[in-house]
Picture 1 (tube, rainbow, N blue to C red):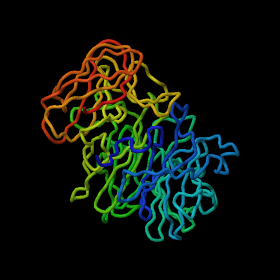
Picture 2: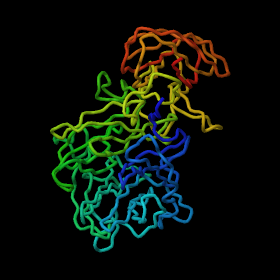
Picture 3: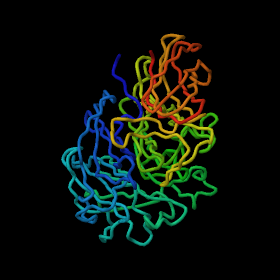
Picture 4: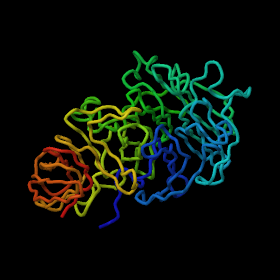
Amino acid sequence: MKKQIFNPYLPFDEYIPDAEPHLFGDRVYIYGSHEEFDGGDFCISDHITYSAPANDLKDWRYEGVIFKRSDDPHNGKKGRSPLYAPDCIQGPDGKYYLYTFAAYHNEICVSVCDTPCGHFKPIGYVHHPDGTHLGRKKGDGFAFDPGVYVEGDDVYLYTGFGPEHYLLTLGKQSKEGCTCCKLEKDMMTIKEQKIIAKVKAKAKGTEWEAHPFFEAASMRKIGDKYYFMYSSAAGHELCYAIADRPDGDFHFGGVLVSIGDVGLGDHKDVKTASNFTGNTHGSILTIGDKHYVFYHRQTNRNCFSRQACAEEIKIEADGSIKQVEVTSCGLNGGPLVAEGAYPAYIACNLTCPKGGYFYSVFKKAGYPYFTQGKKDSSVHYIADFTNGCKAGFKYFDFKAAKFEMSVKVKGVAEGVMKVYDDEKLLGEIAIHSGKEMGEFKGQLAGTSKGKHALFFEFVGKGKLEFHEIAFC
């Protein structure tokens, strides 16, 4: 079997949300926040990066720590504040510049390195010509989630934060929307600034009303158009807008991806979503004639253990992009082979009879969720899989209409695991599970050759840890 990759595309014990993908030379690098399993806050670890060959997005390599929390001069020797979503760009001088934000400081630190994955050294903060830091001057929006774009000698910084209410832990919000700052060649001094996308309070009656700007500003150029990506007030979706210049008049384009597929099929809202939702953040990567959207999913029942995912997207002839569904196969270049074993952890859909909900800082019991063993980071599974819970995998390439499957589960439970091809019942696997890991098999039939989703629904009593599915 050829090498395959699935979502999440990094090692399962790695938690990198907010990933900005960049093609530097012949490698793709991702720059994101860094979290811990079962952490108590957003982005509490140092910035690290992974990279992959541009011609093989299945081969990700750990590149190490590129910026410590304590590296920000205003964050103290102990680096007490978390480091939120960063971005990195190659400047006109050929060096690489990392833009970071330490929580509660309302300023953007600029660091430089000769390589895209070395240790970045701070050189200052984004500031106005009089030296006042961006975010500290009257009329400034909140300096948050920096996105950076360079074209020739022109440098653009995008930043902003648009909650409806004042957040004590972060400070003031951006009252108007996302700010685009044109910078000098020093990569720090502001020459010009303007609002390019509206927050909810200012969006009524405009094209931004249904999907107002909230956070996660990012910019890319595709063809002769400029694409501004952001997370909307809904939180679970990445949206885009299009303009003819990087600081131009942007027009709302649509939704790139929702981590609950809200807006696709019968998924009308968070309650009917294909997944338990939460915030997401990411951007577009273009390699040749291929385009991808990078985003993150939620795990462990709250919003502090988020993982990097990606999907291939298509740019239409008119420049528009249709919303893509979340999948298990992600960067694989096609469906997964319907052979061998796969971890249940790569399920792209997870639902239960209670319906969906939006993850926040507090854990909520009684719902299934993705997690890992607290004492063993190599163990990853779906926890609290009870009666009526369903896990979906998209997609597999089937070679035969009849096949045998097995599931590995743990936990005291008895019932059946119903298996569906898309939404058609293929058969059942009897479950008589105990405290130790058990493997249960069943004959399935009724599918056709080719690309199909698989859904597993437990019907019975008890509570399962769902660890693995396998084609026997």
